[in-house]
Length: 448
Image (cartoon, rainbow, N blue to C red; front, side, top):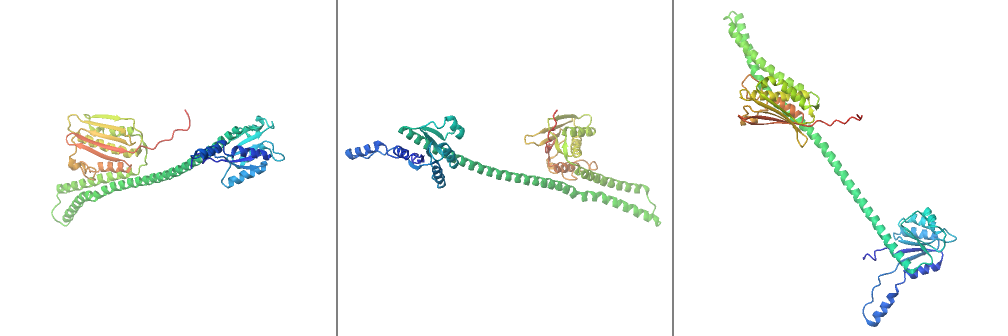
């Protein structure tokens, strides 16, 4: 269908004068005069007749305002609305054209209306006061010119069509917006659920990491306690046996031998005591509430506590960038960094120019990273994978329980962070702790 034939050409004429209706039909419905001449030319000289550009309009008539309103209402109900209505101002004894126009727009707000008048019934001010200034309204004075009527009919039916296309486009856009809104709502709901699921998984992961750390600690506990406990039991058993034998009149008790056995028992008991104390420390830190912690203050306290192990010769470098508070336990974090600094102090013993640096920074992904770096003896490659295992230590026997780094690992894992190490034998080690940033604190509602 062409753009021309797609235009709604339905016109309603509302006038109490039947002759006016005939005039409108002659102007708008009769084919142009050139059509008959074209047909005669085609018959006389051969060839096809030219198709007229103006194919005419479809006119309906109403002789009173009420009748016109009823026709418009019926046309809308049938889905064949009028594009244009020519309405006479004076139509006695019925309602006048101004009221008719008002009521026509109640039935079809897109209807284009031309008020036709031969008298000064209403001034322009009076019309606009009753009808308002509307782009759907034009005034045509009688007697009207045929060309003017045709131009109005063409222009206003085209305008009606463009208006309907605009409405349709707006409806299409509204539907698209509604569809996009629904899709966005579904996406938001899906994202919210994914975030909730992720948060739950993170909680479960932290719990799993904590259980893993506890499991790793518990796995070696029986073995580590069993060895000194066996020494204690053997020593006590020997002492009891010697005392029983002496009570029965046997050989005399050798005080030096009993003293040596008692010393072995005490060493075993002290070993058990250190292990138990480390576990008690771990348990106490595990119960600490997690809050926003000032990391720089924690690092300063840890450096102060580790100053003895670092020694007076060690050069300590602090590089605290503008890091935000982290989420964790202040006591637990201080214990972690104190342990790492004490290890660094042990590693730089005997180094000509010992150096330990502590840096803190925030990464682009929001995580806060603390690095404790030393230029000490380093860690052998075959030991790197085991340094966080419970009871594993490279120190000489009797100088530690092997739980320090394991406790650090458990504390950091329990906070949702991680700890790792890089080391080159003979060049030093770098322990890297990654921690989550603390929750934001809402600004105070009160002004300065």
